[in-house]
Image 1: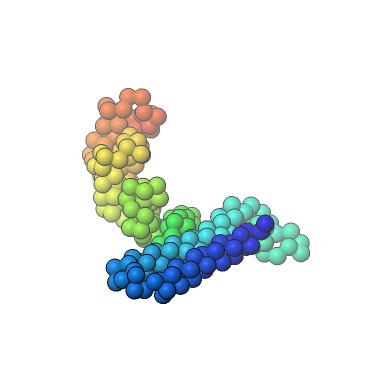
Image 2 (image 1 turned 90 degrees about the horizontal axis):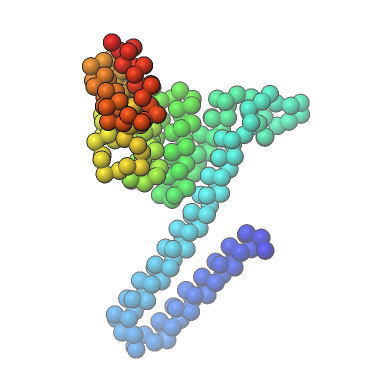
Length: 240
């Protein structure tokens, strides 16, 4: 059975449920009374909201899938007779521009769905690829605000805020965001040595050599088995 047919059957089934509940409420109004009527109406509203959100999420997921296909399309010269952008793109920039438009379509139409939140994150990544770092930082922060700081996309977007602001040379904002990640000791999803390295890199890029050395020294002292040890030592030598 095709997906569209299954979806139509589910919608028909839901319509029957709603219709039956409404009919029963009308036939037994005196028996239910005010409280019973309110309960049934709340149930009807809940079912309707569930159906609407499920349908919206499904549509958003389809659009998100289309955008991801574009983002993963090969970069190669167009073949004679092929439609531009049909299966490949001539440059990484052209591909990112096309994907960005699709991601924006998803999060503008379905901003509160899981797919909409994911689309906003991927749009920020596409903006970063295009060198539009200030816009990327804004999209990453919007992802954090909608997804929550401790969700998967929220955590990844917080790192994106740091990197995008650093690339935009907004070092104060980048350092503040990186420091907040380091200070959040309740979340061990991202290794602390990785967060310290990110903070050290941003501090070094901002020309704050003393602060960067102090941060990198923590990596070496507190995480002797860290995969970042050699990078930390090299950066300290360059800052001296």
